[in-house]
Image (cartoon, rainbow, N blue to C red; front, side):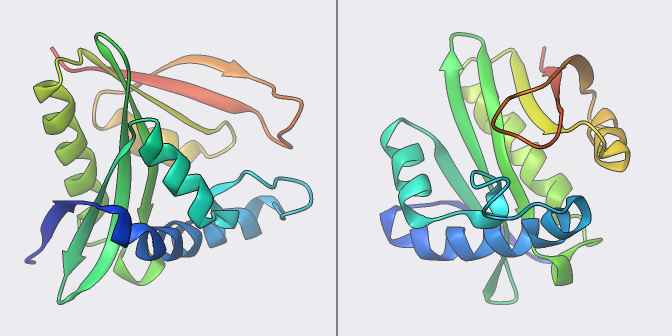
Length: 162
C-alpha cells in the first residue's frame, strides 16, 4: 500500500471539502444529522470553514494513494503543549487500508515537532467503535458534554505524546 501525505495549501480547499463531506456522510446518516439539525457537522463542510480554519492556523494534510486523495486531517495548535486533531476523514471506499492510522501517526509526528505534549479530539459520544479505535493510539476519555447547538453529546479524548 503506497501513499503520500502532504501539507495542504489554499488551492486544496475544494478537495478537502469533498473529502471531509464524503467521509462524514455515513456518520450523518447513522445519527440522523442534517444541515437543519446540525449545520456545523463535517458532513456539511463548506469551503469557508476550511479557509477560516487555515486563517486561524489549522494545518491540513491529505493522504494520496493511486493518484487520488483518500483522506485528510487537520492539526490545530491550541496553546503550548496542546494540539487538536481535527476532522480526520477517510473516504468510505478507502477505509480498512491503514490510511486513518497513517494520518493520525502523521499528526502525532507534526504535533511533536511543534512541542505538543497532548493531542485532543472530540467525537460523538455514542460512537463506541470510534472511541475504541482512538484508544488503540493511547487516547483516554477526559470529559463528555452536552452542547445546546448539537443533537448529540461530545466525548473529548486526550493522548499524551511524551
